[in-house]
Length: 322
Ligand SMILES: [Zn+2]
Image 1 (spheres, protein in one colour):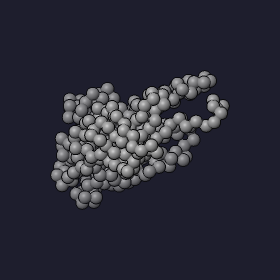
Image 2 (cartoon, rainbow, N blue to C red; image 1 turned 90 degrees about the vertical axis):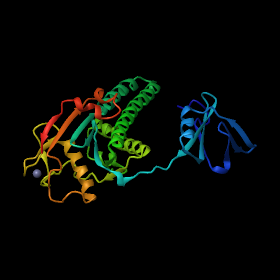
Image 3 (cartoon, helix red, strand yellow; image 1 turned 30 degrees about the horizontal axis):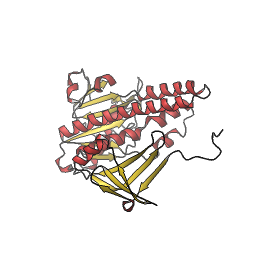
Image 4 (tube, helix red, strand yellow; image 1 turned 30 degrees about the vertical axis):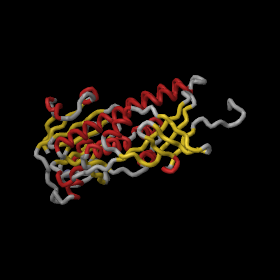
């Protein structure tokens, strides 16, 4: 199947330690080779200047990559910045539960369910790819489609992360996230037989979403805490019993005290409680933290253009007594 007689290395990328490269001014670097120091003139990306001008520190390691197609050398810089996160100033708690199809955010006495539609994107692209790749020699198209899928998901992740970081910054809040094990998808799919479902769980990228939120918060100096998510979507908030499946999809109910709520709502309330309990702020005896809770489901088009969640108050919220 090979097109050449010998194996060919197409992608070369090299990490250079500090003794192998040097910076001269801002747009030239010297790279140490077998022919001595070779100067390389840079055409910096606009982000380079943004980092240089906003107090980020250049790390001493550098990555270079040969781009045969455009006959150029790509130079990757690593910038670091230490952030001061002040947890003492925290006034509120924002808890977040990440699912395949939504990101649920609890702030003050409101729960926002931000629909992400990632399930639809993954399934849609998987089917499209399957159809395209069944045509011989179409592997290239398949890869291009994969790139498009990844970019769309990344876009969604970054927008959600921005919204959460903004609102947390404005409210002086700490953000509570689930602490997921390293290989979450693999463990989750062990018993899943349906290959489409397995693919979806793999692709959902829970970790990616959580990581994006965490990074954006740290960038803004918003404190983040990660708590163990065990039982957060299966335990009754009031009596601690194991919740049962409710009457509607994703609804849960307590067989003992009759508490009823959506799975996502239960999860954010439990995550918040876990954090508060950790801090010794909530009595261990079950007690509702808020008398009423408002729940809003926001389709993607409702939140995509927003910078924060303050502006969504005009939405009719579903009132829930707990
Ligand atoms: Zn209960």
